[in-house]
Amino acid sequence: MKKEKQSDTISTFLGQGTSIDGTLEFQGTIRLDGNVKGQITSQGGTLIIGDKAVIQAQVQVETVIIRGEVNGSVEAKKRIEAYPPARIVGDIQAPVISIESGVVFNGNCIMQSRSISKSESG
Image (cartoon, rainbow, N blue to C red):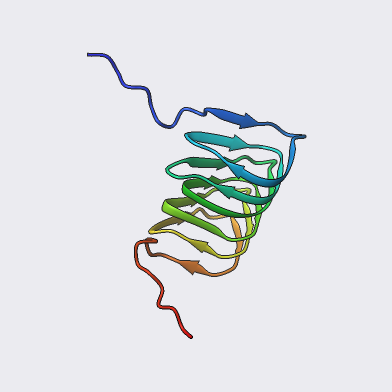
């Protein structure tokens, strides 16, 4: 039988020295090793933040793997994984969150899926 293509294959790579200011929308899996300021969104995509990356953005994706620096809120539909030398300053939200020893995290952590709606207060 023919093996199906893995969904973890990186389809886009933004290397060190790359800078983006604005909104980054993607599909599939993207790896960022540069600087991004603004907003990062994807419906069903995986975001890999490399060791040298500096992200100053609001992130809304399906899955995020963090090894670099993130300043801003991170919201994932499936999971957030953080590995050293990651530095996260901001709130994170996902049903599954894994933070390895050695990661610096300053913010609030909410472990629930986005399907649970927050009650609106007037």
